[in-house]
Amino acid sequence: MARRLSQRETLTGWLFASPWALGMVLFVAGPVVASLVISFLEWNLLETPRWVGWANYRRLVTDDPLFYKSLNVTLLYTAAAVPLGMALSLALALALARPRRGQGLFRTIFFLPTVLSGVAAAMLWNWIFNADFGLVNVFLRHMGITGPEWLASERWALPALIIMSLWGMGGTMVIYIAGLQGIPRHLYESAAIDGAGPLRQFWHVTLPMLSPVLFFTLIMGIIGSFQVFTQAYVMTGGGPNYATFFYALYLFQQAIDFLNMGYASAMAWILFAIIMALTGLQFYFSKHWVYYEETGK
Amino acid sequence: MIAINDILSRRRVRGAISGACIYIFLSAGAFLCLLPLIWMISTSLKEPGNVFLYPPQWIPRPVRWENYAEIFTEWPFLTYLRNTMTITFLHIVGVTLSSALVAYAFSHLRWPGRGVCFIMCMATMMLPGQVTMAPTFIMFVKLGWLDSFKPLVVPAFFGSAFFIFLLRQFFRTIPRSLIEAARIDGCGEWRIFFFIMMPLSVPALLITGIYTFIGSWNDFMGPLIYLSSDSKRTLALALAYFGQSFISGITLHTLMAASLIVMLPCIVLFFALQKHFMQGMVFSGLKE
Image 1 (cartoon, one colour):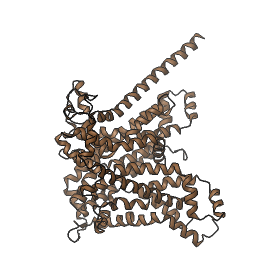
Image 2: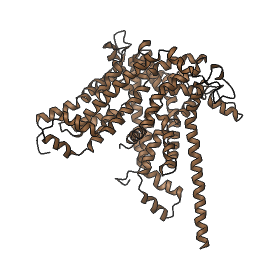
Image 3: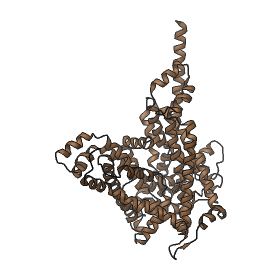
Image 4: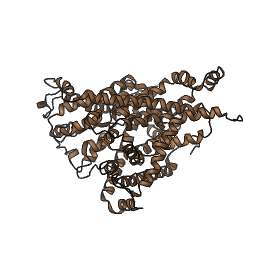
């Protein structure tokens, strides 16, 4: 490092990094600053923008029931879909971490749905949740139960989307399998010598050793929930009666349908603040349950 | 002796029982995972009159292959396919090439500001896309790029933070000595990049390519914002519009056939490059 960097090296370095540097200015830093300024404007792109100070934020917090509704829907979805997905992924990962006949086949099957996202999958699930002839209610009818109207029901539309989200848990499962395979065997051996049964081994070896990965997927899951858009837009349009009116959907509506640029930007910054707060909170609590091997804490 | 045998056999029985339970659990899960797809295939091959039946017909009688032909005749499928393929192809080229260039700068080149820039690059991964949505939209409106592929394609050529990181990690495993040797032999950085780094990084480039493919192929919000005329729609966007007519219920069999056709490239790619898909996913989870 004693050698001074030649001008040539500097130039080459920046040249190779220039796509990122330009993109950073044009599509990240510039828009971030602009978005902050716009959030203090009233601007529909047709008239000249008007400075309104904190009015957008004030209206969101004090005078917009839809803001709270969308927040509520998103948080409810997060609180159910994220832990459920994590628990199921972990169960599958535990069953598949050790060599077992058919292991590869099972892994393939569970992972397959993760590449099938978007509109096509939404269309499929729309039909699966059809009230009269959809797969779910046909099955329930076999059991002698009259199923709810799912996507057409204010009460069951959100649970339907939560069930649908579980179809994509194969990605998390694969991450957990890799995490489980990284746990040194000798830890289990010494636990077994100390007389720990499978349950206590799981509780005192597996979970602590896996906790950084669990923590990571938890944070990514929460961030992902705030981005839920396609399913809600295509399958329910946010309804019925706003039962699936996700935050990302409301923000999109304000920005693109109503062209309320200021209001939408204010919503985006509140979203950012919420994600940061949740992540910060997780980091704070993680001290108590996440074990990092290097520090031994 | 008898006691030990007894314990061993009891343990073996217990192992067999728990093994069987695990298999039942896995099989049930796999069944539930595949059932939606089977249901979809079944519906896509039915006659319109046989779609809404109770009990359902799992194996369609008669099998109506025409449903698939109808996608091509009653829907400008090929136009949508061409649009989607154009955007997806440019995405793959743009993201892979630009991310690899930047990753090379972040791994094997030394330049002032590299550390700070790398941290900035990583920090952008935490930023929700919505924060930049309004200004980016305004920018593309002012540029007159609405209803063209440009807003969807151009940003791909400026690198993607996640793939920059993935490729950088991979490039770092390529020995410095190899690159130094090439430099001593008078090989320029561009040639090193194209003729040494790229060929040695095929697995990482493949992961970047396939995940970009899946993301771009399934992207809905981008086309929804920027594409308005029918002739420019992508498959995902067209499928969503097509689906709205499904409320009437008449075209469900065609809708399922179309959805399956849209999914098919992803399914084929997945089966062809499974290992890479899983490696990419593992990487995303263990990057700490």
